[in-house]
Length: 103
Image 1 (cartoon, rainbow, N blue to C red):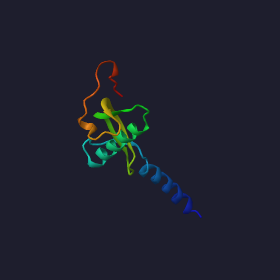
Image 2: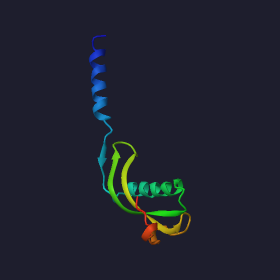
Image 3: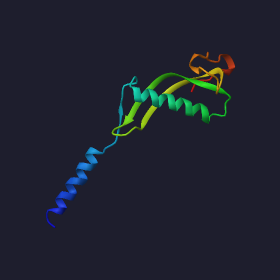
Image 4: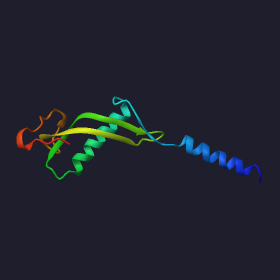
């Protein structure tokens, strides 16, 4: 019984140290992050009631939680002249004037 308490305390301390799943900066050009950005933009467009599509412009922050595939990203996107389900939204021009919208 005497050895179980220090072992348990040691495992708890070790677990909290090893599993401190903080968000850390990552390379914006990594393959996995690029896939996550593409998925996030797709989901954003699907969830919007707006009939126009938004396209990705730039990454402002790219992070992930250690030992997971959970990403934290700040993206800049612009509203295009194309509809949501048009092909090749990446090449659509952005709206200008009163219809211009950035998120």
